[in-house]
Every structure is written in C-alpha cells, then in structure tokens.
Length: 348
Ligand SMILES: *Cc1c(COP(=O)(O)O)cnc(C)c1O
Image 1 (cartoon, helix red, strand yellow):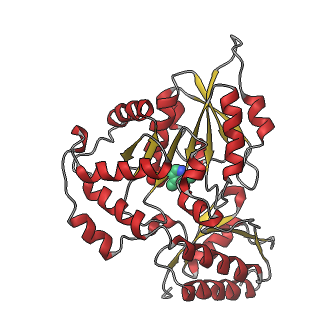
Image 2: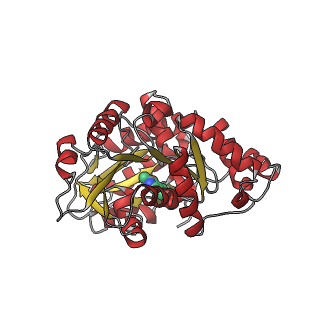
Image 3: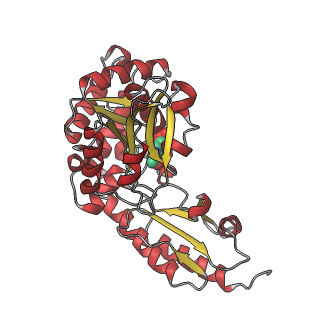
C-alpha cells in the first residue's frame, strides 16, 4: 500500500496552519482559573457577542462543553429531551446521566436532523409524581452534516417557552450551518438559552470549544468546568488559535462544502454506490453500497486498503468529511479510487 492516504474520517484531523501557530506563540497569557488570561477573556467576549449572549466560557472540548451545559441546566433526576442519534445521547458515554444523574429522553431524529415538534411536546412531563422533571431540550446543528434552519429552531424554542424549559444547542459545527444557510450565528442562537461550538473541527484549531449563555448559566458552568478538571491555566495559548480561526477560517468553510458537493456528485455516478441525499450540503457525505457483498464495514475496510479513510456511522452508512487541507484534486483522486474499487468484481 504505497498510495498516499486521503483522510476523510473527520474534520478533527485538520492541523493548525503556520499563521495560527504564530498567533499562539505571541498570545498574551495569564492564569485563566483566576480569570486573568487576557486572550481567553477576549475570546469569551467575542463569542458572547457573536452569539448574542451575556457571557461565554472556554472549555477544552465539545464534550465538556455539552456536559457542563446540561449539568448547569439540570439537577439530578431532571430530564433532557434530545435526538436518539445526537452526539450527547450516543457519543459522550451518557456523561449527563453518568456524572449528573440527568435522564436522557430520546426522540428519533428525522433524516434532516430535526425532532418532530409533536413528539417533543408529547415527551414533556407534567408534574405527575411518577415522572421525572423535564428541564431541557437539546438540539444539534449541524446534525450529520444537515443544517437545522433558524425557523425550525424558533418553533422548538416556542414549545420550550410554553413549558418553562431551556434549550441547549450542540453547535459543534454551527459555522457550517451558518455558511450553508447564509444565516448569521445569532439567527440560530437567538432561539436557545445556551450553545456549544467547537474550534477543533473545520476551524482547524488544535483544541477548544466555547459555551455561551446568560451570566447565571455561565457562572454555574464555570464551577462545573472546574469540578470536571477543565480549569486550564495559561489557556490563552489555545484561545489565540481560536481567535485566529474566527478571523480566518470561517468563510473558507465554503470550500469544504464545495468539495463535499464534488464528492457526493462523483460518488453518486459510480455503479453500486448510493449517496444519501442532502437538502443542503455542508462538509459531509453519507454513502453506502447496494451490493450485497459490500456491507458498510466491508466497504470501509476496502476503502482503507486503497488509502481512503472514512468513518463508519452505524446504520447511517459511511461518512466522509471534507476539511481544511484537502483539495479538489484529492476529491478527484478519491472518486477515481472508489470507481476502480467498485469495478473489481466481488471476491477478487
Ligand atoms: C465533535 C462533536 C462534539 C464533541 O466535541 P469534542 O471536542 O470531540 O469533545 C459534540 N457534538 C458534536 C455534534 C460533535 O460533532
């Protein structure tokens, strides 16, 4: 296997560009547990402003951002309503219940990532003594590459308001949604009480996420972050990368989206490959084979053998993610390799 490897597993594999590293090396620093890192403070102010919230808190990972947020909204025995295939439900070890005693009430995600509104309403518990106390609805945007519209999010917020619930947004890739739907970040976050987004994915920072909300929420989340071991000291080294990313990496997400369209188009023309349709294409392509001998696992294995790394997403199929560092030639090469792979009859 001497073909160069093309890594489409995730946009988390992106490496920080030299200018980002330069910004990190020049960052002004202090002890952020004392609230004295000027670069972290600047990042938090900028993100609060960007999302239209009162305050923000820098956290090491999206997982800690989501966990701190759920725990800030909910007490033990409270319940959060969320998608059955959401990151919080299935990719975070059930941390909200493991560490916070919060129960997760899941609703099957539609293919477009939405939760049916009538289902949300049905899952909200009254104060019947047998039931948990519903406190929170959690949405994810983008969901498997699908952007949820601000209009949908507003409808969820209305249900929450009518029932005295809060709404949290796992916006790990919210900038992708913003670019794809030509809507500002605030158009989405206006309809949530708290939001988490990642700098370590398409924005190419080495680490870091932010959570935003009102002063009371951020105050609680800051205590929880410390208890979880997420109080970092001279974290401005990382925050500088995130600030640089906000200034330089957001608009170029359009390139990732164009590459994903190119990939989806190319793959869909190959015999035996079925590409999941997407109303709006961000940086992900889900596909599978309709050939009986090519299960999702088997196809992923053969792709690896030809130097194309992808992620296996259970029944959703294979996920390929475009990101910073890939070129249109890389995507042409991927399509070519898959074409050759599918041309080889089964068993050879
Ligand atoms: C990656 C991701 C997270 C978690 O981020 P980490 O930094 O990997 O902990 C949360 N939600 C979604 C939707 C993600 O894609």
